[in-house]
Image (cartoon, rainbow, N blue to C red):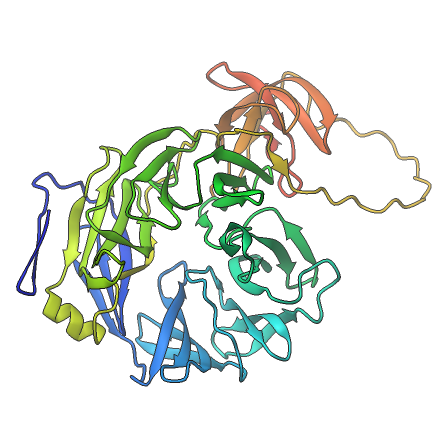
Length: 492
């Protein structure tokens, strides 16, 4: 229960508090940032060294929580100034990249810009149209760049804004959002993957909306798209990077913004236009397992998942949606126990909060790290046939092969193999040797299997019928195109 009396905020705390889940989180309010943990302890305070004449927006915090990227502009004119990288541990500016005159500042926040010592950024200028750059964080120098004038045909050039979605292994995924579009609220766009080493730009079926949610450990994406012929009729989709497929998991009326919660096991949805109506909690299967009514209006970019549920912050608004008060409190909901207002983890007095923030800025959750182990995950729901990313076929080459002796096969029926995955990925066990077949379970790394039948060549993959230690039988691919997913057992 929330009570405001004469400028004082009283926050009720549940007597049965959730166990410490082990997470840490960076909070930002105005020019101040605070690092807190699940016990409500303050681990670090940072006062950003930004001149009061300049406004700034936090774009991203690096995966290790040590570096923050800000876009800075002059407060009075709105003129873009720079892209600033700041060391949160040392509390020092690392580098400051000046933006060209006339730069149009991004309107979409909370991007994933960092990849080791590099960071990516997208913007629009009068000379080049949309532009993507990759910067060396330490020097502020450009390591790679593309723009609307140099990309190949088939990629939108005008009236689109580039938004960085993910960046790893020299591959950068980005959306081109048509923010001037009238249909579907202008949310729908197109997305691409740019290989900064080979310079190739290829379309992707992920990241095609303004505010997708990305589960970093697995690379899965959930987003909302509307029907262009009926903007009031929406759909929530999940992108599986292992199968490179997009599935419709939930079909509500209208558009929703999704958030991964409970260690990626569930999805929380808020209505895009009216976040005061009940929120929806979904299983990965698409099953609606509960409605949630927050105690006040949620700060839209202050929702973050934890192992047990999610964190959020709120603000009080008037009937016409004018912000009356930003609440200086961080709350956590344990979705394993149900949906309620949650417990207060951290809070400040209103006077101290406004002094630190330099006014009455909203409390943002900039970064969360939770070391809890992942999964197991249930398969994504499929209300329609999944959409698969196009397969790139190598050009035919007329070369006469040289006859070579036939080697002994590496795999054979009856042998024991071990599942091999990387970075938290999983291998699907399917009912039939096709990517369109039902997923029976997810096979985790180091699981031992017995080969029962195969090989079967289908859809560019080699399939084997296998049996798990629990006796479940199904089909799995020998290699997913990038990794040998089944390897001979060392004892063979």
